[in-house]
Length: 81
View 1 (cartoon, rainbow, N blue to C red):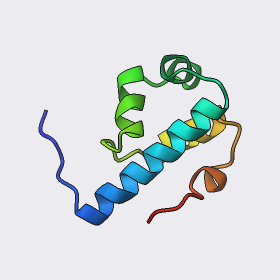
View 2: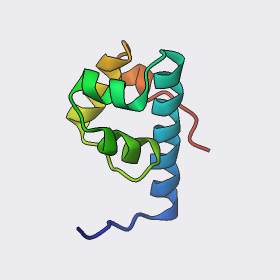
View 3: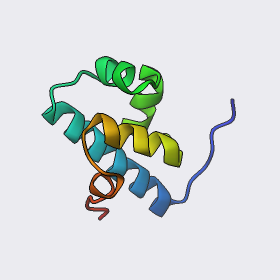
View 4: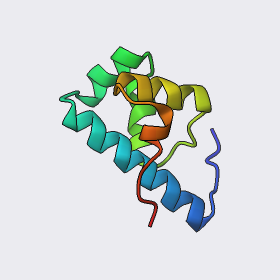
């Protein structure tokens, strides 16, 4: 599979989102594997999200938010700089 190349700005955004997801997941006591199982996504996919390697689809953002008991807007409220 060919890797997508993102701009520096986009890469920073994806990394910031991934860090937000990881922080919130850990605060709720989930391992990455347990969280992925809970929301119906693959553990390796979630690892890619948390490392900022994935440009996450909108429906998966909703799954992640629901798994964290947050609204999508709450999940997307994170510092990007």
